[in-house]
Length: 524
Image (cartoon, rainbow, N blue to C red; front, side, top):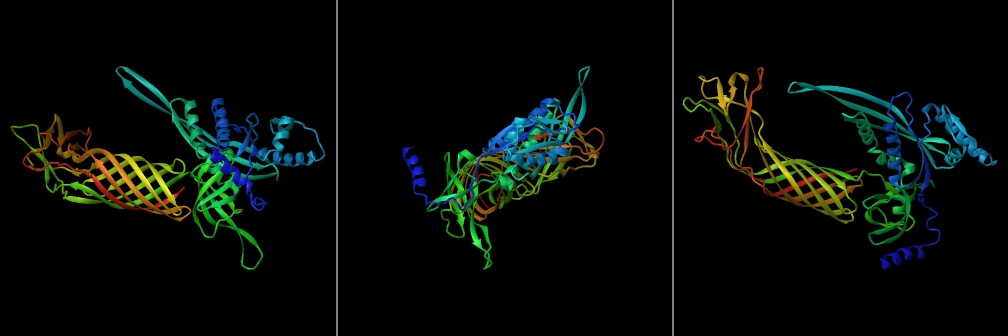
């Protein structure tokens, strides 16, 4: 720890004089947040207060603002222009040492001492309610001789958030967030709607140019870049920053800043950050401008490949036998499953960053074998090792396999019988019965992938995985009538006596083994 502190101090001791002058470095600014303006909407006080605290909390968690809460003031959109005008006037009056006076905007009166602080802040945030719709669904259900009525509420909410640049006296930006909630408790439904609306607010805020963190490179050592700012302004491991370099356009003399590189944050200290170079078009040097690349911190991949399977030959009819042993009757389907040792796969991977190195991974894979198709859902944790544009990721996951067939029409072996009695359930042929087969397995997956970053927001990936899953031995056969009035259905296992012994039945299927795939990844 002592060596780390000495190293950080040495960075500042050996900085060239005037290094930070040409670059813009963000500072923590005062931001005043007003209460939600609701107009004529009948929004409960508990939900109104929840909106105020939720919006304020999102700004506080970003750490890039000194949040001043003025939830008691709810300025309508019709009064925003007047508010901006008065802001300009009061700043002008400040030069003449004007006193502080209460200010009135519509029905809202802002105390003089509060208005003085607001007028000296960086930004003012004014949220207003654009829609608050409540619908009620009533459901009746009977238990014994008693009928119960249950109400559930669906609430849709739309909030517009206006940002006012106090120093310039202008409306800077505006955002619209929406959410929906459903619950038997009206207040809880409202809070769920607010949570959904506010959930993406931090990400949307970081998309606004004036809110992006900006800093300057203060030292470069090999692939490592150090820059000002750290936990004090909300910098986190895994964040990415574009390197902006001043360049002249032709011989016009006009200087512009162009992105020439990308760095990823590795370690964060209170007032300084260590990052690794992802790529660079030119040499990154002290004094280069860094600008935050706002991201949700997730990746979405689309992949396809080949997977090892063990599917035996089942290219025959499956015949169902009725319960009546004296006068048996039969239904059957043609399974048409040929032997397979490999199967093509396609899928989607969702990755959520958990810092610089670790991430949560969710894979949804389709096993494209026919007629037995499969779906795999696998959840795990991964770790990455980076070297410039290249990275190697490791994965450990648990998963669930669901294999099934499309529903097939049942055929009857004789016109003498109009129904099939199975497990006490009568399946009638004139109600168009169908048969669906399904089975489930669980297991583990380990994998290794090689990634190449082709653009700031995209990458290519090649991966090798190995699965160790329980085999599917006990299949389920679901028979269901599809037409007529009351539709009967029954499910039997693949070892049921209702499956003809002399005909083929369902056999053991396994997917344990390797998989290779190629993927295209988008960064968010």
